[in-house]
Length: 226
Image 1 (tube, rainbow, N blue to C red):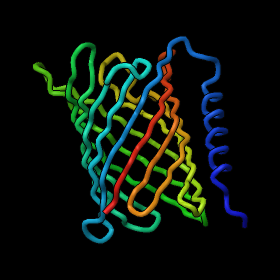
Image 2: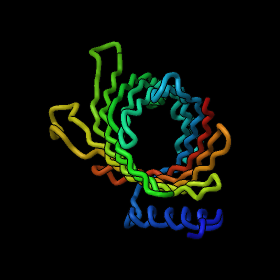
Image 3: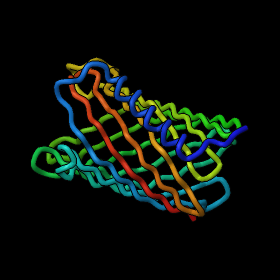
Image 4: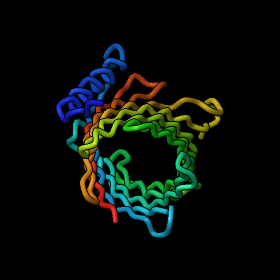
């Protein structure tokens, strides 16, 4: 079997990006371009149990305005080769109008993984609970996230990948349906890893079901493992 070249991986990512953009259909009236960056460290503290610390920095308004700075602490337990359990906490320090507010996000859920040769497929489901402690009553929001991802390991450190995620929200107001699809996110990217380091470069298209708005997201991440 011929091993995929770096050029073929990049071609696949570009083609995947074109497919993602085309999936948006007719251009929407309102759109934004965002820049996402992620930096983190993670490692195995005991057998089959990893912990990690990440920092997310995001800019919106055509990448001109800092929108979010969020640290996250998480744990991942490998139960079987095909099953992992995630849980974590993120402090979302995000802009709301002209000021920054803090949202406390807790999450947990399983990952189901299938690996066949160089191909890896994964289904991740996650229950997410958010709290905002305003001067008034505490506000909370619940979201169920379902993500399907596929990647191919070229054998020389490169791994192109793509994913599709649906955000289903539990109503936080009496005027909304009890459970409703909130938004979707499609991603294509390329990961490169060597020694204990890994880099990712990706493009994402995100849109809400209820609003004529979409976001074009360009991102980069770096992780170091111990």
